[in-house]
Image (tube, rainbow, N blue to C red; front, side):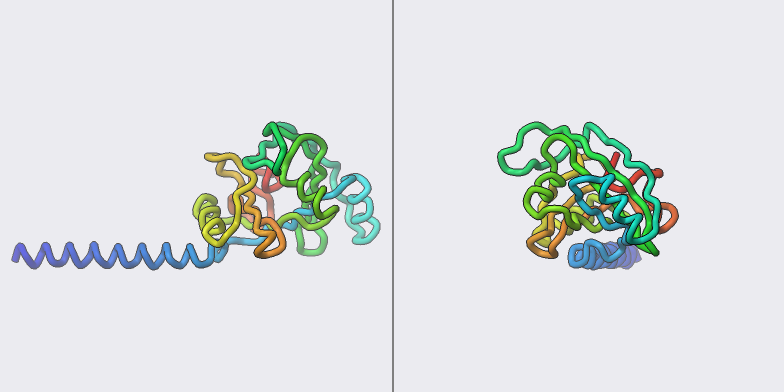
Length: 190
């Protein structure tokens, strides 16, 4: 009888391992499968001018930009030094799409690198995910490069997928209410 009990325990442990492997395999194949789309991030040269253009074209009234200093890039563009920068950000909704405008104003960041290389354009798509670290590692396994978001900071991470998808992916905390930024802040900002 004792051996039967051991056999059941081993069988249950094996079922648990198989379930865990299947779950991990599924996550590694689609790191954003459980994610919710949050916003489109657009890097701009002049946030006030671009916000006014959105107002003129779409009839929306974006709020005043917020200045964020002490923005830290994890991996800086080639040849850059230092890790602190400043940027202006504003988020607003056009129809059912959340837009985030970002104007890098000081220091080296992936935003400034994007602006210098590609001009004013879409920089990232943001997704709220249940597990930021797991999504980060899944995107890296697919060939992405982690470029922004400090180690241990669980609010956001940027993964450069430009060569693979044409844009950077931002993974952040899933908001309590779909479509709203976490903690009342734009995703990607601490």
